[in-house]
Image (cartoon, rainbow over all chains, first blue to last red):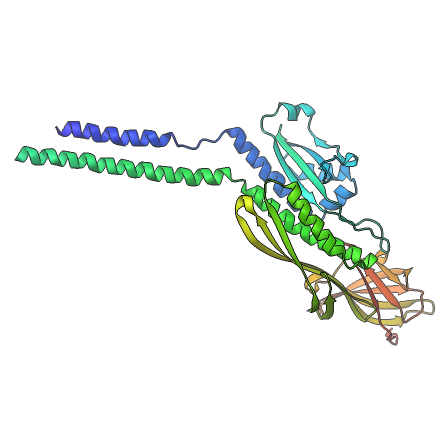
Length: 146
Length: 252
């Protein structure tokens, strides 16, 4: 009789544990990868803006400097593509060549992270003749690993 | 009788195990909820978004103050913040962002300068201690993440203090000034391009740090007559105009 009760009790515990294992969280590697790249992208843009170097590069159309800043800040195996838009989501053509990596890297990758960041203007001109207008720019940075 | 008691003990064991099993499943479900909630929420995105809004609200104050010191348009800050408020709402439609702002008005003492704010902007010029400032308080709500009442204050400030003016040599005069920003921090790295005297470029500018006063002093050399009106622009483009009628006797 005792043996039957032990068997039934064991069966109950094993069933409970099996049921629990169905809830086990096993996120896909690609999702983890995207989350990781998003964190990197947001931190990067916020840091560059905090240091006061992002706005001058964007409003001054300094593609080369921007490319260098992104390349030296991001890990070597991360490829990026930066697009800049105005508030009507029209691309700012004068600064849309900030790409590191082949087009195929982005088209073939399953894990592309996309982060957006807003800047609201920057002064231009020289002392005595500065122009400081509200002119927002939306930065969309795509990241993937090669 | 003994058999019945033993049979009951067996039932108690099964009931106890059932209760333990229910507890295991309940704790497991709770843990699942907690873990999946954390994993699914893009905290980094929220944190960066709040940082972006806070930082660029500060930048907008600086930008508006630059514009104000160039054009004297008293409504520039209010207009810019209204646009910023609407653009945030429009650019992140799914986030439910509401940025409220309140502009400083009335008299306030900032870093030793008495300023009268109107629509968040104030300017004291043509004084031995002159300053330009912009001040606003913000309240940020992001309904999609349950963030309500996140408050932050922003201010932009530039102060010019004329220390002394004196003749440097037969052709050149010199005015020594101190330039400070928010929290009375000294501004470093200004060159002759950042200064004008009586609306004219200057010959040269040298700087030295006075540890006793905690100030960076700039010596401005120019050919204009004294007493002179000194204008300074910092790296943000904010301008202050100072004037001191006092002329010192050369110390060298």
